[in-house]
Length: 77
Image (cartoon, rainbow, N blue to C red):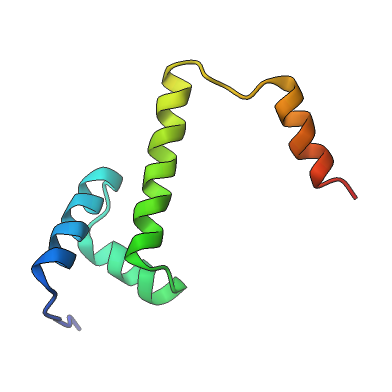
């Protein structure tokens, strides 16, 4: 069964932009939000973080050994 909702132009535009960036459909994004309680703003921030990480990787900008050690130490027993 398909349901339809009416969204504002702003939300529709944000969904379309996010769908293009993530290669998900609008329906997938909305279903994920409803199923997992993730807001559109959360998903946009997540996608931006992934993009930033990919850009860093493309530029061979990786964490230094000492930076990794600090994070590992933080989560050590």
